[in-house]
Amino acid sequence: MSATKPQPLPFGTVLGYAPGGVAVYSSDYASADPIELPDRHSFRHYVDKVYTGYKWQCVEFARRWLLLNRGYVFEDIAMAYDIFRIPEVKRIEDGEKLPLRAFANGSRRPPEPGCMLIWSEGGEFEETGHVAIVTEVLDDCIRIAEQNLNHLRWPEDCDYGRELPACYADDGSFWVQCSFEDASILGWVIQTDDNSFAEQFDPIDPHLFQIKLQAVTRPYSSKAWLNIANPDEAAYVAANGNKLCSVEADQDKYFCLSQSAVTELKRASNELHPLFMHATDYVLQNEKLLEKFNIPQEIWPRIHQSWNNRRNQMITGRLDFCLTEQGLKVYEYNADSASCHMECGKIQGLWAKHSGCDEGVDAGAQLFQNLVEAWKGNDVDDLVHIMLDKDQEETYHALYMKGAMEKAGIECKVIRGVNSLRFGTAGEVLDRDGNAIRWVWKTWAWETALDQLRAELNDTNRTPGQVRFGEPRLMDVLFQPQTMVIEPLWTLIPSNKAILPILWQLFPDHPFLLESHFELTDNLRQKGYVSKPIAGRCGLNISIVDSDNTTLDATSGRFEQQDYIYQQLWRLPRIGGYNTQICSFLAEGRYAGACTRVDSSLIITNNSDIMPLRVVSDKDFLEL
Image (tube, rainbow, N blue to C red; front, side):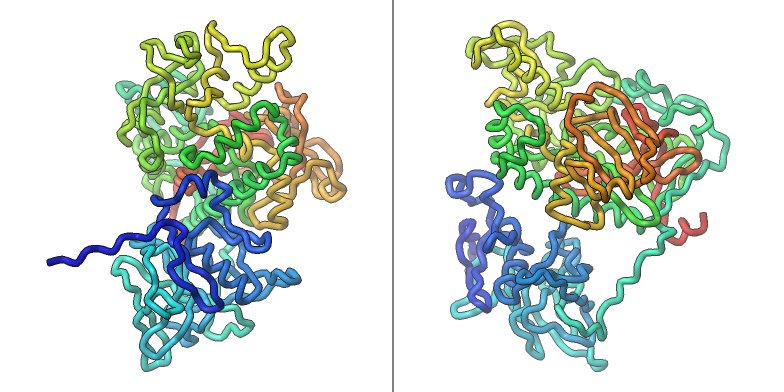
């Protein structure tokens, strides 16, 4: 007879106490009590106002244990395996930075009590890795304390959760065995000044952070290569023809990135998403900050509701980066209604097949499947109405996303414009066939609906709260309390440029961020700066000013009445006559693919071209 498998204990149950009396909790999220944990903020844990992490993940426990027992914490990281490369911790008492050293499994310096044991990405710890605190080191095993594993109570009178077999080799190296066949241990991280036997992480060759322009070796054929029997490709051809970029002379050209550059892009994307989420939560806890986003106060409760609703998750967004030999810097996060997914995830791959470009691999090859998995992980339980305007770009973008939804098993229906919609007897919005709109994915920006709301609030002839029974507007659909919208309403916060100065305030001198402020500072004047409207889009109303106070470039547009933020000038690399930006696409908050946007001007706009992007090995890249 087989033994009954132990059942996980409810979320938040104390499983045991690690040395120093630090509690370890069950993180069985399926059993989390929605009354005790009603919103996202309630899942964030703090100790004396120091953020330790998301309840009750492995990283949260490691940070909390170090804070309570050693008085220092490590920086926010995207994945547990990133801890292996963190160079320092910060002592809370005085802010002093203390060195961290990483020792690979098999190092001649063994782990010691209080150090962190780190697992790599993959297997049992797919995508994230894992971290535990070493509590005791013996000749034949080590003992560890950890969260977010099996959610079971520890053995009686133990201050550790598991033992892992370990041994010394004849050469004095120390090896720890992983208990999961499909996972592996990277090593351990110790706070120490002594770097004997520590891993040496040499800086990446700056040349690997270049972007290189190449051309296919065989003559480019102008023969049609997109299949118009596929609705999304037909819509794309109607908008752009059988080409990726608009310039005829560039049809055979493509850009290359090194594998090291893409690895860094992935790390930056995975690290920045949680930082933007942290800043979003910070803003929503502080009304004075929220006022800076120029969002009507009447909609604030809806934004809070959207953020607090854990079901209301992002599917995708796009981070815009500058990549140079100095590394990566992020300009902004298009967390709401980001575009160019089809170009990244499909068109550039089909271009390579047509052109005979077999150098490296397609930088967007995995995007579609990552979107499918994101939709599978969402809680959609009804028909999704895909809402779009009559713009051609929105059409193929919507059809591409429709394909991902359908592959994920989600029923969906396309609605172009709002003219076919009507109100039901209870004020709900119905489609042409009488289906109530409950789930929406949209290409429209939330700002479009906000503009309608602002106009209504300024209408002195309208009674507040009045129910409409005429033709529904976009805002009547999206602001219905019973409607779940993707991307959710709270994405207004990370998409707004006002988040950038707040990020800089929270994470000053972060290597992926640019200095940003609400006011133009002397420091920015000396460095050069970019002024951006807080709710601007498409590269409109942007000015680029150098350190000599010379305006290098500027765009006009419809956002001139908005408040502005000021961001440090960090110029795009100019390659083959184009200023070249790297776009990183995320699915469920994780890196999912990349493409390039290029323009002869300094400012990337919605009219800027996209050119194919390939990823090649470091060795091959340096030989290009």
